[in-house]
Image (cartoon, rainbow, N blue to C red; front, side, top):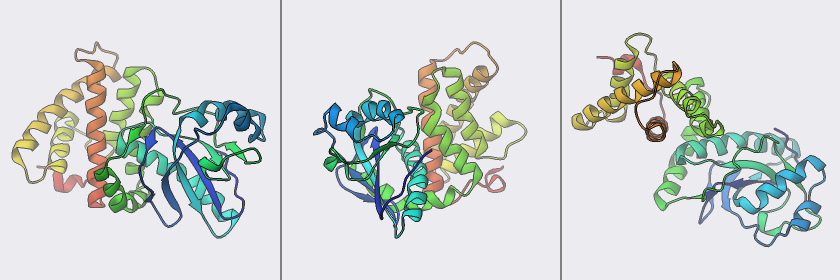
Length: 277
């Protein structure tokens, strides 16, 4: 990922997410609304100083619906914070169950990009190129992020949490459903330490972790996870998938999202010793 740092403010343009108001994610990063509807193709391309950036700008400027405003005292620190903001986009992708592109950096806010502005591609992998409607944050989601995002950033230091977040944020990058399931379940299984009787233990641990005080919900989730794990095993081992694959992928992603949100709100990872019978 390539990032430049000049002065003390920069912007990472985002697709796949829409916000009504600014949300402070950290002391240096603010999630903001963004509008590039004023830009035509010629102006967009004139802001690209590198030939390789032109294709990225042409693809993603029309899809830009939000931005990170990143501030720092020095250009060096600014570049570091901007680079780390990729994890903020990945966290948002996971928590909101949507695909957020973070492929462009601008030296000015989106609605002021013009001839003479500087646009650079942060990477050339073109992830997030989708025609799906951007996810519009609800008031509850905005409040949840404001309250809990700092916890999520701290938990990224935990390898199990970081892996799970990345699995949920990136499984859509693969077009084969079996691979999508394998990735999602790598994230789910990696959050727990079960090494034997995995189907039973994972189902039990997830049910207890998500619903520690509700017996009925625990029983329902326990049964759901066992069925999903059967589909996961069939996908990984090349067996015929009996269930509706798309539904299994969506349910698995929902479970992983619920686990990540629970970890974040509690500011802790699951403890197998506490969850074991």
